[in-house]
Image 1: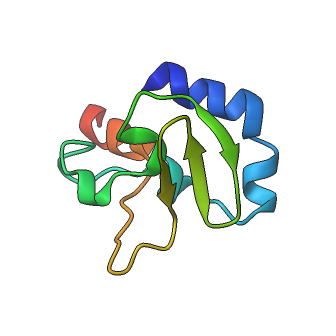
Image 2: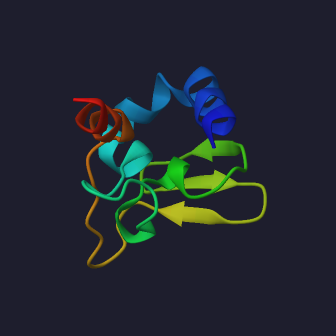
Image 3: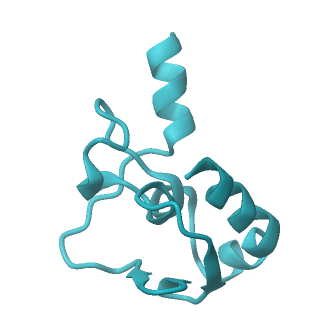
Length: 88
């Protein structure tokens, strides 16, 4: 996941915010359990496939896409906030 997330930033990092993507739907994790609770996990935190496109409401991967506006979705804080909390 880390490699794919870094590749996403390199390839789509400037475009994603212009399309309305924020840290939570991309890099979110459960506030207590990190990415182990996938219902809170951001798009880039639940798979290890590289993203091939970013659109206003979805991230496109080679064999599937993930919508940003899934009904009832609750995005957790970015994983770096979870990591800082665990260290603190």
